[in-house]
Image (cartoon, rainbow, N blue to C red; front, side, top):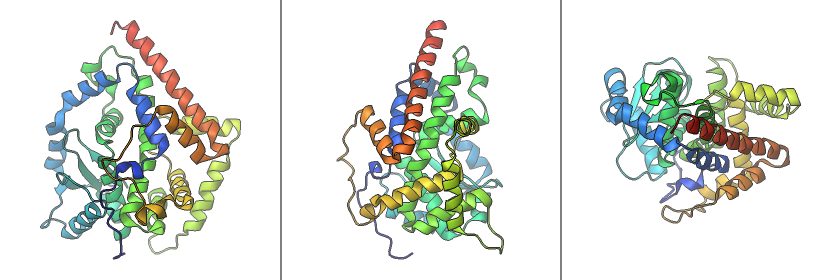
Length: 326
């Protein structure tokens, strides 16, 4: 798609989902949260995280995977990325995934499984998604979440004696909401709604390998999942997602499709978006109110339950820290 609009000076607030902002603000308010972040970041350090991929992945550049490097360069230009160019690595990993990681100098890793299952437009969407994470300042927290899932915070001696379950639940709840924001950035990077929506279809079922795939049927499937709002359905949704770092693919597609239908995506592409430097700090209550309004009446109870979960997590975490003499 050669006529993508360069979104000059765009602020990350243009694509940030209100539930992402609310979850992150609440996460930061957990007693002891800053201490956990400082200890984990200090223990691993920027160099330790980067060395892992420098040693066992392919760093992309003009002379290494130049086609992918060209797509990446175009994405950075489209989102008007400023500052030091984040390094891009390809890791020989069969899973359909990518990530933006790091503390002071974040970088992007795209798995070989993602590349083999997607076309060029979808790869552009993935890279814009990860650039969106970086521009939104997500990477410190998402890196800690990745460490949590791969190593386990309980296995870190620096956090011995800290009750971590409330922290883990709150961190992963935010991580899932942050994906909604980054999905919007991915769409803005590719500026082709069908391509962006088809990415979720590919992530759910892989390449059709010569068979046919139907995006409309996938969106119907997403609606069917969301329509299951009985008491036990909601219980199973909580159980199935509590320790996931990403929302289910159908949920992501439905959420992105709602944003497209709201007209907000088109307004941004037409040039109506907040610019960097014009952002205003918003009270937490406003973000929760926006999230409830965005989801509509049938989703407000879900947003309320998320708010309640964070309040319970904060109380439990505070109690645990006091009990440990922190």
